[in-house]
Length: 290
Ligand SMILES: C[S@@+](CC[C@H](N)C(=O)[O-])C[C@H]1O[C@@H](n2cnc3c(N)ncnc32)[C@H](O)[C@@H]1O
Image (cartoon, rainbow, N blue to C red; front, side, top):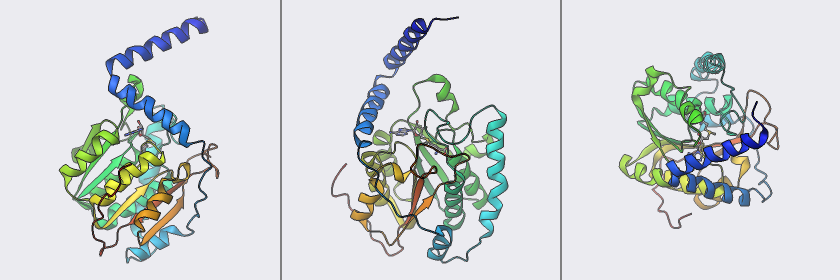
């Protein structure tokens, strides 16, 4: 049995070796951690939860409530959770290196948007186990059109690195481009290459600085009639400052439905947001960079 002193020396040398193999990734992560700890000292912004957000979303899309697409999702969601658990992988809050898997309500929102808007181009940041990726890809496949580009900063730990996207079955991967790296480095060139996008999902680093960096650019690239989904909005002030600046016609703040309580959150669940870009909206220019 190893002594705890020897174990910590081995863990530190493992970290040093990984830092030497990936100095840029290590620097990015250290900077993010520092900025995150500074931002998280600020009190939480008290977002008002939108009751009956699903009805409001369907109304805004000009669709009847109680849609069949939501019903077709439920068995698929239960199957995805069971599959990962069957492989001995923990699912839910803090199950991926302290990060959360996409929860049932977030997945329902994304599923409805992809099934109803029938996008050609979906972009997401933050893959983790890949629940959001899996359901975007499954919904695109049922639509018979569209592709997903995902950006994820791979964990430095090789074991966790192998788990990125592990919820996505091989038969759904043909319409998927997964780009390793931070959204700060990868998102701007990806958006310029894609031209316009139809849906953007933020689920990477949840600081105001990073949320605004991503969603300001995504909003600019979003076609009129498209949608933004921002996960874990309760953890930072990014949604508030975004709404203040861009004043979209439709935004709802929704309660998450994690598979078990997330005791780190003010409501044991967390919040996410859905924002629609009106069909009449002109493209905004990026006046200030975050
Ligand atoms: C919350 S998990 C994503 C969960 C996933 N959407 C799901 O439903 O299973 C967050 C992911 O974001 C990645 N990440 C963290 N900081 C990032 C950054 N700056 N840029 C891109 N990805 C980042 C983490 O490595 C992790 O894989």
